[in-house]
Structure formats: C-alpha cells, structure tokens
Length: 440
Image 1 (spheres, rainbow, N blue to C red):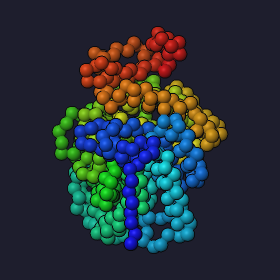
Image 2 (cartoon, rainbow, N blue to C red):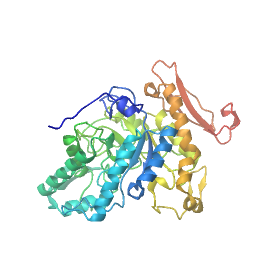
Image 3 (cartoon, rainbow, N blue to C red):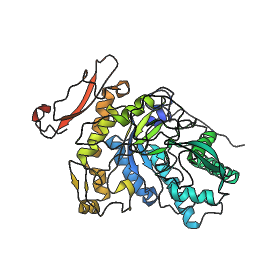
Image 4 (cartoon, rainbow, N blue to C red):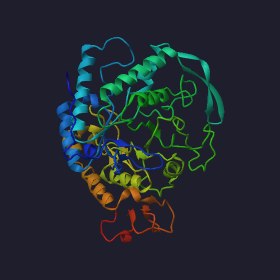
C-alpha cells in the first residue's frame, strides 16, 4: 500500500515557512496563510511561452536576490489550444510540459506565480465559446454607462467545457503558490465596443473566477487583470453597480467583478503621470470603494519600453504610498520576450525619451541589471522596516505634508502618525531635499 509522508518545512523560503498567499476581508494587503503581511513585488513576463526553463531559472535567481516576490506571467503565443476539446498537438504538449517546468522553477525559488489563464481574451475565449455551443438568446440585463442592455449568456455546452477546463487547470497548477489572474486586461470588458458579443454585463471570465475557486482546495487569491485606470477602476462612475458610494473617478467604469464572490483582489493598471501633481482619483477609488479587497498595481510602465529607471522607481513608490499595496516592474525585453510591441517607435514619459534603437538593442542581461530592478529591492527593505502594511495613504491632505510649488509628492503615515513616509521629487527646486540630486 502506498503512503504519503508529510513533514514540517525546514527551509528558508517564506512562501513555505508562512504558507501560501491569501486575502482576508477588510485587509487591504495580501498576507501569507499565517497572517504575516506579504510584500507584493512582481516581475512581468507576458510572453512566458518564449522563455526557456533555463532562462526562467536565471531570471528567478536574479530577481530573488533583488527582492522580488512575484513572477507575473501569461503564456501568450503558446502552441497548446485550450479552446478545443480535441487532443493537443505534439507541439502543444511540448509547450505544456515546458509550462510545467516553468511553474516548478518559479515555485522552487520561493516566488508566487501570478498567472493569467486562457491568454488573450478576444481570440482564445471567443474561439472557445464559438467551438462549444456559442451564446444563448439575450437574457442577462445590466447597465453599460447610462444604458440598460440585455446580453446573451454562455450556452450550457460552453459553461460545461469552461468548468472542465478550469478544473483541469487547478488540478495541474493549483498545488503551486499562485494567484489566479484570469486573463489579459479582461476587467471590465477588454476594450470591447457596443457591437461585441460580450461586455461587462456578460463577461465570461466571471464564470472562470467561480469555477477556479470552486475546485481550488488552497483558496488562492482570484483577480482580474484590469484595463487601464482611465477605463476601469473598482467603482468609477458607479453606473450599473446598484450601489451608492462616493464617486472619485467619474470618467472610469466600475469593475465587472464587484459582485463575483470568487473575486478577492483588484489588479489595477495605473501609470502615474511623472510631471503632473496627482489628483489621486484612481487611488482614492480603490481605497474607499475597493470592497475591503487588496489592490496591487499589476501593470505599470515598463523600463526601457515606456519609461526609464526614473519613472519605474516613481511608480513603485506611488503605488505603495497611495494604498495600492503591491507593484509590478517589467523591463525590456523580458516583460514580453520576443514580442515586437512598440519597439519601432520612440516613447516619452515626460522625463525621459526612450528611443526605438534603445528598445531594439535591449537584451536579457540588460533587463536583469537595470538600476531600477535593484531599487525595487531597496524600496522593499525600507518599507518593511517602516511596517508598510500599517501605512495609510494621505493623498493630498496638507495636514500631513505641504509640498512646495514645484515639488511632486506621495505621502502616507501610520494611524498615530508616529511614522510618516513621503516620496518627493522636483525638476527645478534644488531645496526639495538635502541631497543635491533632488529628483528622487
């Protein structure tokens, strides 16, 4: 007779010493299972299918040394097709085995794997539905902006297949330290237009969230990668939610997952403006209207794609000091390896110009050594020494900090104000800080 022998973990990796990452209602940050606060610092890899296991191992070794705690991924351009019931091709099976090895390496390095299922939604999810019974007649009613709309639901066949697929995904990867992030930018409606088959009302990823949670014995956090905050936040204009709350960001839509019980945290996409004083609309919306769920800045500007080290550093500090208790970092080219997205154009973040030639010349070794990737770890050390999880964002409340005219700042303090953290910088006022390099 076979036996399963269990023993107490005796290693040094926090994810196994303290237990898998979880959420607790009313706590605005993630914790380990034993209640220890979890500092979310993610490295981005949307093109995981193009990274060899050896490359993943090299990246994990470097990132753990730098202080990262999360490996954010999705297997874009993989060759296994989850939208059909037929057997995978040999190429698809090779990619799936490769993904297995990547999951193993990430977990053995003690990193949490925030992993998007079912990849790019407008192609893979649409094909999955079409291949399994399509849609019903319109019967789901909800609000889109100021309009009441009635949308089709998934067919029973599509629901059955999607549930089986989610059950399979949990069985294959649920025993690893993971965060289920559902799909790429699928909250609230992956930039759909009014003629699309699905939107925030009948978003099929709501079913994905419920099915994953149903079969997950570890109760891993479930979130939905959001569109940019200009499109979607937690509550936004509130239209269609049936709730009456303070509106902080009237130009944005509410999350499609507010009433989805399995959804336990928000994965925002926020790019702070480096050269304008923040109005804190999105941050306040998440802080006051986030339903007691943790929020992380899941996608910011990537270093040497849309910003450089300066901007990458600012957005990390801005995230934690405005109550988004988690931030992501990504570097060119590893944020989406072998992907040519916007490599042929210059970008300008208001502080630095990122030339197309710089983007094209960037290598894996560059991404591992960008100064801001090290600065993420310095920030983590500082924030942990300051007990970041007790900090409360003070937004633009001048009772806590009054910046000079040409100074940009983010401020947070603990409940009794015995600790206050201010990140400030200026492009013109050299008296902004004691360090002559007053830009950061």
